Image 1 (tube, rainbow, N blue to C red):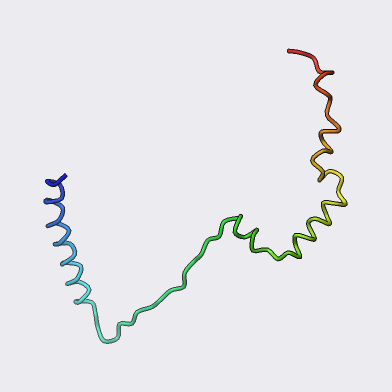
Image 2 (cartoon, rainbow, N blue to C red; image 1 turned 60 degrees about the vertical axis):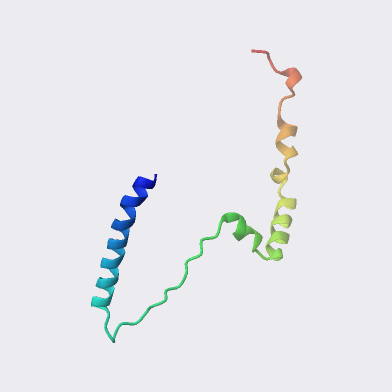
Length: 87
C-alpha cells in the first residue's frame, strides 16, 4: 500500500500543479463566479409526509365510501381453506 501511495502522490501533486497553472492562465478580470441553484430530489415518502392534512381527510373520505378499499372485502369473497382441494 505504501508503495502505491509513494507512486500516486507525486503524480497527483503534478496534476494539481498543472491545473492551478491552467486556472491562473485562463483567469481574467472579467471572470465572475456563478452560483447555481441546488437540485433537491425528494423521495416519495418525503413528498407524502409533506402533504397537507386536508388531503389525508379527502383520502379517508374517499376510502370510506368505497367498499373495495376495505382489506376485508377480498377476504370475505375468498373460498375458505377448508373447502379447498388438496394438491
